[in-house]
Amino acid sequence: MKGIAREMAMRRHHASTTAEVVSFSAGALVGAGLALLYAPKTGHEMREKVSDVTDSAIAKMKGYTAEAQEKFSRNLERGREFAEERVSSLSSEGEEVKEQYH
Image 1: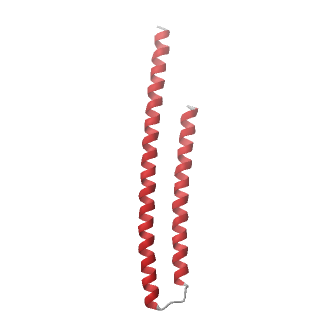
Image 2: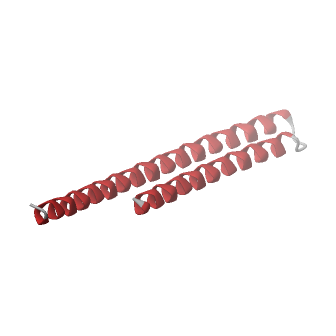
């Protein structure tokens, strides 16, 4: 059981790290957008720049989100496989012990 708890703790840490990376990236993109808003440019240049940055930010966030979802799904599947292996192993061990005493 300690192994399972440790594995689950590691998975929570990994998910937390992924969330931190996505949050940091979103903050960096917002900061870049604000820097552009305060830069001295004409109205037309500013609208083009904001539009470009917004489109880029949206594309990056979609990519980060897809990557985070993929990693989460992959780790969830690995966790399922690990749990199934442990259940199977414990079940086999239980059967062996049961046979020894019968």
